[in-house]
Every structure is written in C-alpha cells, then in structure tokens.
Amino acid sequence: MALTPTLERFFAPVKERLKQMRDLGDFVTVRVFSTSAFLASVYYCFFSRKFRREHRAVLLGRAEYARSLRATGENRALLRRNIHRLEKGLVMRPRRPVFAQDYILETVKCFVNARRNSDIYCDEVKWAADVLTEYFKVVATTDLIAQAKALFDTAVAQPTTDRFTPYPFADLPAVPFSYAELHTLFKRRRSVRWYLNTPVEETKLNQAIESASLAPSACNRQPYRFHVINDPKKAEDVANCAMGTIGFASNLPCVIAVVGDLSAYPAERDRHIIYIDGSMATMQLMLSLVTLGLASCPINWPDIESREKLLASKLGLAYHERVIMLVAVGYADPEGGVPYSQKKSYSDLVVDSREKVE
Ligand SMILES: Cc1cc2nc3c(=O)[nH]c(=O)nc-3n(C[C@H](O)[C@H](O)[C@H](O)COP(=O)(O)O)c2cc1C
Image (cartoon, rainbow, N blue to C red; front, side, top):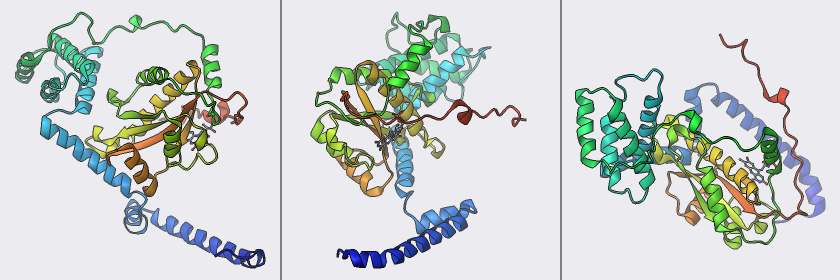
C-alpha cells in the first residue's frame, strides 16, 4: 500500500532507525561469526544460504569429473593437464632421465579412450599423441614406463610432419607493433554501453574467440565456454538476468555469456580457476574485438540463486557450469558517452615488497 507524502515524511525517521538497527545487528553477527573458521561455517550453514549453490556446484563438478573417468575412462581436463605436465617435463633444465612415472599410465589410458572421440577434438588428441611420442622417445625405461609405452603403441595415431610438441622460444613470431601501439589499443578498449543498430558478424566473433583461446590457463585446461547470443531481442533477455544492465539492456546487439566448468577439477582447491582462466580469455576477447572495429562491455554476474536458475535454464547449463560474466558486444554508437573511468596510479598499485620477504 502506497503511503501519502505526509505519512511518508512521518515514517521516514522510523524507517531510518529500523535500518540502522538492522545494520548494527548484521555487523555484530558478522563480527562474531567471522572470529573463527568453524563459526564462519556455522554461519553459512544455518544463517545464510548464500554459498549453497557454489558448494553444490563444486561437489557436482567433482562428481562429474570422477563420473567421466569411470564411465568412459576419458577426461579431457585430465588429459590436457597431464599432457601439459609432460611438456613441462620435456623442456625442464636439466631434463630428468625418468619423469612423469606417477601419472604416465593414467595419461596413456586417458589418451587411448579419448581417441575414440577424436573427431570432436582432433587437434587435442594430436597434441597428446605428439607429446606422448616425444616423451617415449626421450624418457629412460622402467617397468611402468614400458607398460605405458606398450599401451600407447596399440593406439598411437600416424606420425605427422607438423609436430605439436615443445619448440625453442626463438621460433615464436616477432611482435609486429610497439609498446605505444599496444597502449593505444588498451586505451581504445573502453566499456561501451551504447551501440549502433548494426548486426555483429559471426566471423568477427569467431575471430575474437579464437584469439581469446590463446590466453594462458591453469595447466592449459581452458575450463570455459563462450555462449554467444547474437540476436538483439534474446541478448536483451539474457542481459536482463544480470543486475548491472538497467537502462541499456535493450540496446545490446549481442551478448556473450562466459561460462566456467567446475567438472574440470577433482578437488576444491581449484574451484577459483574457472574465474581466473575465464577472465583472462575474456580480456583477450575484448581487446581482439577492438581490433575488429567492435566494442564491448563486461557485465557483472551476481551469485544470486534466482538469477542463477533463470540464466541456467535459458542457456541450458549444468549445475556445475557457472557463469563468470556476460559481455555486451556491438558497433559503438560514436555519439554514445563513455565514462572517464580514472585509473589508479602506478604508486597506488605497486607495493615494493622486497623488504618484507625474508
Ligand atoms: C567483472 C566486471 C563486471 C562489470 N560489470 C558491469 C555491469 O554490470 N554494468 C556495467 O555497466 N559495467 C560493468 N563493468 C564495466 C566497468 O564498469 C568498467 O570496466 C570500469 O568502470 C572501467 O571502465 P573501462 O572498462 O571503460 O576501463 C564491469 C567490468 C568488469 C571487469
């Protein structure tokens, strides 16, 4: 029931007082329950449900990781991680005569099973085959390594001339632009909220996503996917699921949902990696878009149950898939305003910690 302006004025101090009391109550509760890890767990078990989805998603991710290994003997995240570890072993200085003993059999078994599905991700399987071939070429033999090699030999793909194996740093392409030019690109990337009514070409999105895939990721697992909603009506629908798009959701030609997959990890300790890897790739995506004449705006994804459910149902996400952020994409309206967004200074950001480190 709406109050009259007179009643509004009368009740305003009462409302303010109640808010102050609630804030004080929250403050005291939070202070008390933050005094130990145990009390913090009690708080989030009995007084707040705000971590429930995350807890369940982490467990379901672990369950899915184990299920895929048990069901098919195959797990892309495990294969990618272990092949990455082998590559690190191959480039180690000095290289040890025997390495990777504790995981080579598991890796070869995983590879053999992955080959059955190799049409879906053939480059990944080729990378694994090439690195394993190189590994068995240089490693000294032990019983276990011989067993792994025998299994590998039953499944190895035809050798190819272009090898997906470690190479010298000097083989990398030279940087064809200067620091100043790169700095200009960084300056040119701004969060843009006002776009022209021009469709975004799929080819450009694909190019930007390909560049995003070159970003570093922990153990090269790349545990994220880009859900592309390149349709203004549907983009608005998805953008409205977030909180930070009020006033401009209806102006977005395209929205990309960056989604992390917790089934890439067998243990809780790695639960944050999806956010780190996903964000690094998204930064490259946004910079690439600038070079293609496009603009973008990252959009915060809040961990709020009702919104999580809504977007998960729209995008068909599994529970262990977690939205990292949304990104609006389009051709910037040249007349649209861009916030100045003053950046922190060098002295504000740098902490010289040499003295602190023992
Ligand atoms: C993780 C993340 C979430 C963001 N969420 C929103 C958002 O919900 N709505 C919005 O208008 N801008 C959002 N932004 C854009 C920031 O406001 C913007 O990056 C910041 O003000 C600096 O401006 P700049 O990107 O132009 O340098 C977000 C940025 C990041 C990195």
